[in-house]
Length: 405
Image (cartoon, rainbow, N blue to C red):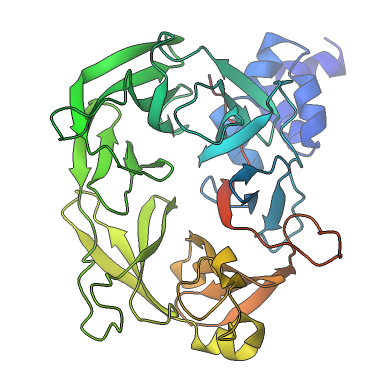
């Protein structure tokens, strides 16, 4: 047996060599043989490359302008070591209308053909931005299943290489007895390669608006500003209402009837977070965490942005300025919360804030902050000044080569 054959037949030695190669080379080597493909795609090999499977290496940002989708993406690196953007635009599929990201889930991205209306049918695919591998998903239902209320990706590489997509859809937008619209859940399984109905139809208020799905605790979660929040347990295929943090009236509010507003909802390191504004001026927050048994929330962190506002006075919105609407600030300050990022050492956990021209890392325990990068999303107008965005979608970039499909 030659020395090269000896190396190729020894998985341990071969792994030690391969883990030092760039990702682009590894993707080429997967084509050498089925054995090499299986080795490089195995969870064990991915763990050797990326020991912390929950580490968020960066945020992929999708701005929109006046409800028009922008098909180029910005990137914010979060690791202390250099991390490059995995892509600038989604070109792995030559779709006539282009692709946008809807959700990130444990290293994978749920992508869809570019649309500005959830009611329009679109094509879906799953993309790994680390390996640049993708899987296309067959069309949803029949031609009448055209009204999509929400969709979400469920993928846990620690349990299986298979993923599921859960869709809440309707065949009609006709209001039933003034109660709402009849919806049906449909589930796609990569294991079977097909969609199928799940459960029985149910009624949602006709004006229900739900955010992007968040996968946590083997379930997909959707929140609504004005109606019940939903939770779909993927294994049991059970839909239920999800409890909310206490969004009670604040007697000190100067706007009658103003309710404490939630400003962020997301998962990190197997923790589900719900960020709630607790003052009139949108500079104090409670970061709630959901109990794993869904018995309720508890306050994990308290945030006060006074020190950041003092350091960056450009966050303060003059009384005669109205462009603060381009950010998620409600009253007096320019900023948006891009993420709550939990670390293996919780003392290092932090909030990612975008303020004019910068991205800030705010540590949730010791209340210190540092600038991550200078940041001017989007493009320039004809006068050369940076345009800000009206809405911003931030997706976790988690590096992995784990098999999926």
